[in-house]
Length: 329
Image (tube, rainbow, N blue to C red; front, side, top):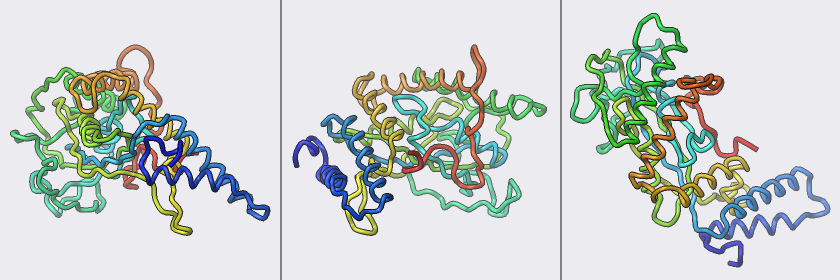
């Protein structure tokens, strides 16, 4: 396997060797586009190997299901995209997750009939999830799962309403960081239930992937300070076969340099930070840091808020926030 495969998976190590061989095989009649592609793949793989430093780590994707009550799709998108997103050990890492939705959840517990159409469109109906996923109401209560709290007054501007929701979410993250919860609002407005799927990328050492996925899901918090996400799928991302020539494609070739750095920065933070994956002390540190990030982003403490451009993209496209593999170079 050689030095390139030290501590690596056989498939990924073979992909590294293949990229290096291809990078050295410049033919005299090769098109410039193909040379450029080989060079880019070689740079990405070498950047990956430089950050890996012989350590055994595997790329994983976790899919999270997150729900909240909200009056309409725009409000739901703010709650489920701008607020209730996962936090890595390095904090908010938009390059490492993407969001699909929101759509109405038409489960019986959500209190939404099949004929109801809240925002004037025809949102895609979603099947009732299998046992073990998030219900439409908080466990043991009659209150719907809620992210970001309730609006304080009807005449508030959109910006004021978002800042109020962000302030509520920051408090909820602090509660989660301290291991405590608060009661949900007593007077729920009877809003319908909305849901999104979040696909989160991370690196994990042998046996650590389930704990890391659970930790990331536990950073997605509702207004009580309780987890608002459930892990619905966990799968390794070891690369793929090229559909044209069948060669092995290393996962770094689809990630790009910025995403490679974000993945390994997070993995380094796990190795050098407080607690192993999933340990309460590690989760507490992440949630408390996330609360500070939210306050800084929305200008809730000292200083001005971060511009809102790009916070929530068009919810009607079914894709909001984050970045897909290969989207950045």
